[in-house]
Amino acid sequence: MSSAASMETLVSLCKRRGFIYQSSEIYGGLASAWDYGPMGVELKNRVQNFWWREMTQLHDDIVGLDASILMHPRVWEASGHVENFTDPLVDCKKCKQRFRADQIPAENMISHKCPECGGELTDPRQFNLMFKTHIGPVESEGSVVYLRPETAQGIYVNFKNVVQTARMRIPFGIAQVGKAFRNEITTKNFIFRTCEFEQMEMQFFIHPSDDQKYFEQWKQERFDFYKRMGIRESRLRFHQHGPDELAHYAKIAFDIQYEFPFGWKELEGIHNRTDYDLRRHMEYSKKDLTYLDDLREGERYIPYVIETSAGLTRTVLTVLADAYDEDEVEGEKRVVMRLHPELAPITVGVFPLVKKDGLAEMAREIERDLRHEYATFYDQGGAIGRRYRRQDEIGTPFGVTVDYQSKEDRTVTLRYRDSMEQVRVPIAQLSETIRRAVREYRRPT
Ligand code: GAP
Image (cartoon, rainbow, N blue to C red; front, side):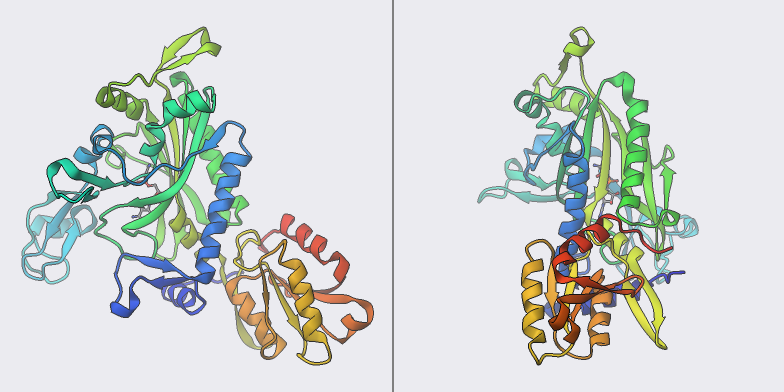
């Protein structure tokens, strides 16, 4: 049995334990922006590394890229974002609130009444989600640039570069992690939907006739990825986009959804983008982006693309929501984050039972040895039970305690976060024992 976290509980734990803070809090905060604290940045980096290793290191046919956020403005005309990347918005003339027309009850749209105050609503108008700014000192039409709303376009415009310089042959993929920006109106639910966020995207270039095969393959691979990360399968499902949900570039799209505390929502999108993007970039740039396939008797074609597009910051929320659990220890509630050990900000906590009699020195020495391989934390303050509890709450999977017996036989107690089981391990075997436990980790059901 595990306990689901409410959003209030999660937000409060994230603040209290240094995972995530409201941006610019001392000025009253900026509603749609969040900062990652000491624990949060470690968790986010580990989620990113987990994805990067999976997509690049473990796949011979995928290479990485890091394209810039600012791109030539013609990119966004070619991609269709200038024309199509819009939300229908309505304003309340009385309370001045702004809503997405597709997210308020149909009866309010019919009666033109504000769902909050009953005031009169304007007719819907299309609002582009891209942030616009200017490059250089003069704010003219000619200096307009956009903050990228997806990382994918950086990959398409570098397709030819990668083919030529990394000598990649179709089928192959290009992976990228980076910031994206959208002027979102609905920015509630913590880090779920924000104006500034990070994406982990991979574009897989294929022969057009193979699109269904690779679409199915990537759908499954991406679903399995979340299971490997320790996310509970019962909280994951697919959702196929209906015709009214499809993005302007997509022929077929499936979301992987997660059951967040506020319901089933998109975590990642898998899209068949056909040759839409490369074809448009050919038209707008007048450059040849076709591919000459020597494995297909010299056939020349515009590759199709299967895209896997995950939100990094949204995955962090998923990992946190999924990890949260409560149980009872000696009549007291224990809050425990059941994070996969490869994601936990701290892997091993090291504690002397007491500060005196050389135990602190011995514990420090063990911690200094372990830190070359693991993220460690040394804590000598307070009762040992309390120290364990503090680490449980941030998801530290292993605790090492040095006691009087350690001085006699050079063994320590290794405590497992999930089961709270404690075993005696020789100091010389500590590293290897932890390594094995990380590799074999399974979340208790
Ligand atoms: N390149 C395709 C693309 O951007 P998307 O479905 O619009 O597709 C992909 O976005 C993923 O990016 C989403 O599944 C979500 O995880 C994340 N994402 C999108 N908008 C976001 C936002 N405003 N805040 C946080 N994450 C967001």
